[in-house]
Length: 95
Image (cartoon, rainbow, N blue to C red; front, top):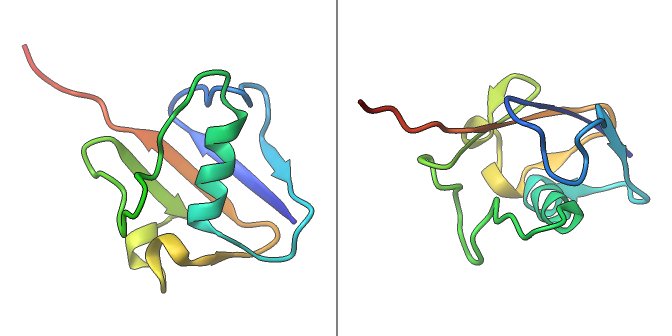
């Protein structure tokens, strides 16, 4: 399964990759984000243990341009070969 990746930051561990190949036919968004966490040289927590949604103050994630929360199953939505997952880090504004 190949998943394409877009982001507004360099994802640690896969800075130059535009897609990742996995040796499985089924993978949920949660599993995908957990895999990304393991690829980083320092721990990044995209999904908090037991969470049903991502912390909206930290991350915004879309699947094929649609917010993951609008997908059936949200974090447990099953990705398909060729899907594009966009991971954006939310920036703090202030002055």
